[in-house]
Image (spheres, helix red, strand yellow):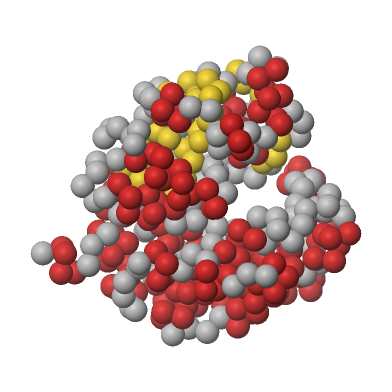
Amino acid sequence: MKLAVLGGGNTGCCMAAEFTLRGFDVALYDEKSYWPEHIDGILKNGGIVTLTGHDLTGDAKIYQITDSLPEAVEGAEIIFISLVIWRHQAICKALQQVLRPSQTVIFSAGNFASIRLRGILGLDSPVVVGEMMGNIFPCRMLSDHTAIIAAKLTGKMVAAFPAQDTPKLLESVGQVFPCTKGQNVFETALNAPNVVVHLAGSLLNIASVEKNPKFGLYKEGLTPSVMKCILAVEAEKRTVMDKMGYVMIIHSDHMEKVMQYDKFPELDDFRRLAGPSSRLHRYINEDAYSGDAMLLSLGERLGIQLPTLRSLINIASVINDRKYAVEGITMDMLGIPGDTPETINQYLYTAKLDWQSV
């Protein structure tokens, strides 16, 4: 089976290597203008990525590395997209021209991009569109052709948009790695660890970040006070998740283990993951714009106050000269109707308003 991975960053290269070691033919794609140096390093190494860490390990020879989108997706049964959120709209428009009816598209991390792609393809398109809960796994490129995956890939929550297509998504993506069913793409996206961990952890360490571009949040930045802020955001998120009837994945337990630096040596590779490197790093700029802005927006739609989260988004907006709560991914921006859990979840299931369903 051929798979396509769109995006040549840390996650894209690690996915391509992981899937190769799982026995699939993988096409790794990125636009030439976005190619990071390690793509050239992989090519110079004969297309081989040396994968280390906590999942599959070994030398993975990537089947195809290309800057041609049509070549990458041609014949691919599943297309995995791992791009920063600023590139989602462009890749969705480009895919409209090259997708075939039998293909499946899944985003990692999703950040509600499946809603954008479905809007471009239309409800009549048989292409299955979905996303994962957060990123597929924590990972980094260590050199031009060496990478590390810091956690084993098991039981990833996925959902389609509309959610009535989730069984098809599970059947397709389940051929590649174990998946569990999410109620809809809100449940998957809002359960990403980024939503509660990244913004709080990064902003409370911003002085250290700006003094040291090689700062590592999980090695240096988790303290009792930082954890109190993470726990406060998690508690606020729970009020929204409970109201919506969603499963709530707790991430603070893992962070508390990571924070005990002299214990849990099995977490040392995770602790060594770099970032954030600046105020514009994705831990701040992307997460404030996407998952955190949407959580705040959904809370407002439901009449739920999220004061800690709002404060963090406001601080991120000040230091980056942005207005994340207004210009980010929100209910209005995605055209999500309804102000009750029932109407919102119904729309996420069918992608239709009630009057369109009859």
